[in-house]
Image 1 (cartoon, rainbow, N blue to C red):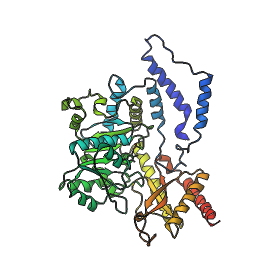
Image 2: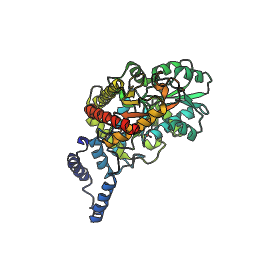
Image 3: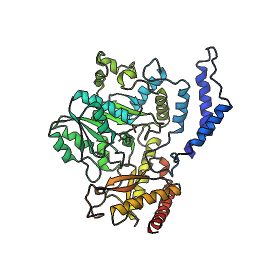
Image 4: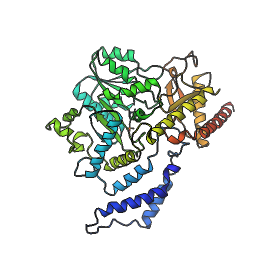
Length: 457
Ligand SMILES: *Cc1c(COP(=O)(O)O)cnc(C)c1O
């Protein structure tokens, strides 16, 4: 696994740790408790226990949304842990708070936001909670609307916040249906529309540009959930509809992006950004607005969470330094490679006699397909078999229950369009997936052959 070469990592880390310790060398020595043989045995036990994982970091893991942190993120995180800063307050994490402000500003710049208020969070769920908490205060009692393909946590978050929640139907490509949305907006009960740029199941991109046009006729707030898909704004190979949706991000009210999904970070790193810094007043009523746009803000005073790992901010900042969010840069190329891999896998699947592919190609880097069979039950069973056989060949895919309307109408013409079928699904989010595609394809074909045999036996 080239991304995990421990030699380089530990050598760099030791040197950086030495430099960090120098900063505190004037203090009387206070050695840490030694790690003795018992500790070594425990670590050995832990390492052995961790064998019980799928090989998430390897390109043959092509299932769920998992991407290994960049080695520099691992190193920076580990380094920061020797300080263990808390980014709740400047006193608890001075340097790491400053780095968080810079890292979040880099996200805002990537989205072409001229100003913002924002911070990191433990993940996308908490970041969305915060965005909807602000939205709910600005439109008390009004509903949150998100598509039926939006992340499942939106309805739960709304319930936590005591806000009504409405699911908006999607079209056959998994994008929010504009006619259905407008119908709902006419009721004047919708305070916030959650627009998902990159749904978690299939990577569909809601038409943000079109939804923004509706703001001319109806009053509502737009929150963009780009926890998974946000970084694709840097990719040069999006289809025109998706590009137009991403180009509209500067006009949204708030946005969530997860650096721990596509941003090469360890878990525990989400981000929420508000376009209008004045929402800071909702966090702390007795502070003047200017306080929140000052560089000296305490991140804890614009965050619902209290203690947060300063190490997350340090890791993100270091990764951004190495791989800036620049169109055409190495980081952007990594996203483009994943997307190219998805398009190529989809092309091969579409030409195969064993599979059914959706009517439109992948919108980002998630591919899904069904096993060809006369019935949805047969197709679902076959998908499960292929999934199992592929795992035996070290190819790890995912399964997803998806509505059959995502497939061409003649696939199962007798079946009600919203019934679901178990599909195979692959998130090709590692840059290496492109160069591994032949090996992935070979294993998928072999697994499909095995599955067909085991079903006829
Ligand atoms: C993953 C995801 C979330 C939830 O984020 P976590 O970091 O898992 O809490 C929310 N929305 C979308 C679109 C996601 O893909």
